[in-house]
Length: 280
Image (cartoon, rainbow, N blue to C red; front, top):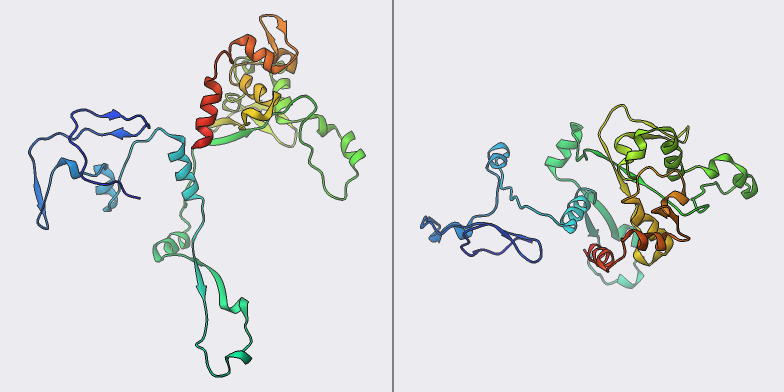
């Protein structure tokens, strides 16, 4: 959907109540005529002159600061190929009632690739990429970590495996015990300095690559695990669940009580932010 033009003359750039930019459009009296229509600054589409010259194409550029815009872009580049629905049929004849209907041959869900995209894929160019890499960080309440097993495995034997008591989140506790540098990092900051070794199931100091961490989202109505996630944005270098729930040398019974003691739930701001984020 393209924005409507013309816009209003504006002396300075500002941000409206919805977070969208209102760009400066000076009334400098300059007018050009295109196909009999007079155009001034109110009709200028936001653009980047370097990109226009580099690619020789119409490229609109808008500044955004909303998660819904970013989500739209990532959804668009990951949505896959364009698809078309094709239906095959033949005209009716006198013996139409005797004709057999083959629904499979009459309906095809086809993939469409344009010539430019086909050439791009033939040459093996990247369709898209993300930089830096994003590590998704799971977490869980005590003794509630996920356990993955196959259908044919015996549950009692699976429960006795050592890996059941290991997870990325519990490995974070162990790394905080071993590395002094880890004690200064939050859970989301941890992958910037350390890397998870899946086979050894331990965190080790990072030697290369730029990586950022992203903690899984939890709805506010999820109970204690929501308050745990809220704490993970602030606590640095804990070695146990009890240390997370300790505020000013006082060990609280629940994560919710600890959040109140730390002042994270003095008002409804956290809930309002979560609702606004979910609505977008």
